[in-house]
Length: 279
Image 1 (cartoon, rainbow, N blue to C red):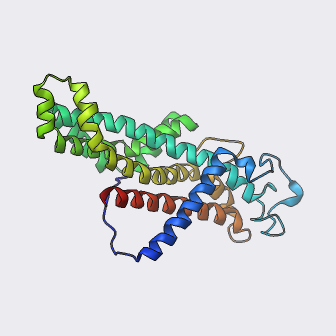
Image 2: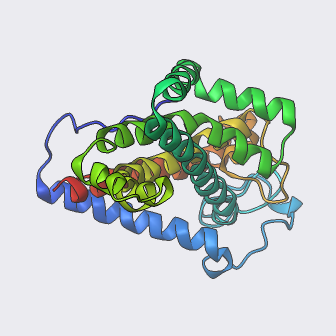
């Protein structure tokens, strides 16, 4: 999976953009609260089973109905947000760290190192990202740590290429040459003069990548490659409700809506950050 910063296809009115940004901000705030303090908006323990309340529809079985074990879908969504957000943020942070270092060293070093790293990045970007994550997870086993690493692998090449391009654009500028001429170390030049210029686009891409990472992790969980947790994440909720989709549609539908809204809201946040930086 390759993340590319693109311009919007069509300009929308400021009023529509303001409404979308507000709604996405409210939704992300709710997801953030659910991830940090789920008990604040859900006072029910989702690990407790209620056989007498199996597959009750919304209203009769709580706000969003119950699943095949009698657990409230609303409570599962709230508590499952922690796993989704944790994996998304941690995987993105790992990808930024690893990919950023690779791109930084390759772009600043130049020559053979840059050429070899560039070919390796092209090879990684040519591979289907989700398939690569699937292979890693299937080989290493299902756990939160493995899932974070496998999802991060999907985005490492994208961050490395972005950082490399930013470094290549700044390493030969006059202020960098001046820093070299006065005898500053390579580390000081990188941290004081090169990295600050690459920071803004990396932040924008990282913001968008969080939503994509949540989606990739949910896809792996849907395929049965996610960690076996007492409280399932959103991908596992989608998978567990699949056999009941015709009669008990709410078990899978609401997790799917929550996942979609989160990815779209994070993407809108990334677009807003880009507009603020460019504007």
